[in-house]
Length: 120
Image (cartoon, rainbow, N blue to C red; front, side, top):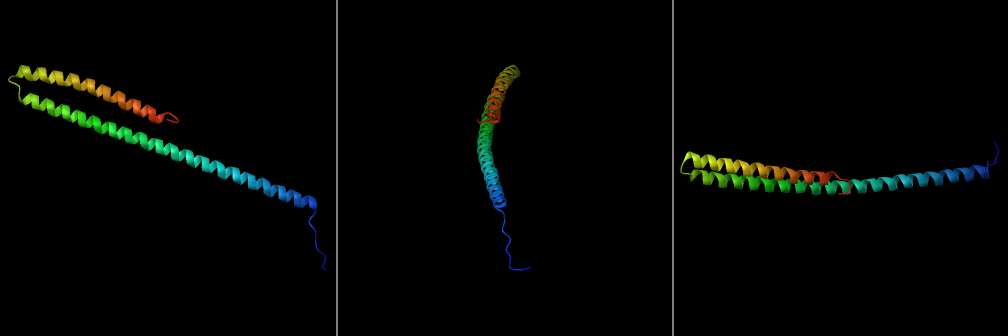
């Protein structure tokens, strides 16, 4: 082994340089896609959190409304003079509560649908 140096052929260097450039481009594209995906997930997560907060707030409003209606009913019930009046009051209360619960369920369903829509 003498002091001869081995020279890499020009074509091989050009091929290696092209390969490095392609790899750099592929990694750059991959990283860009990963960043974009992470941003989309963060946006989706924020949207879902906002929707869940809306559902929780709406549910708590419904609980408060239902509790208030129940206490109002109880207060009226203790003031009734006879069983007929108590049964009439109870029938009216049940009728209004069923209507209220149907409206509340419809409202919560609309909020849930909104949360499940893409880009909502």
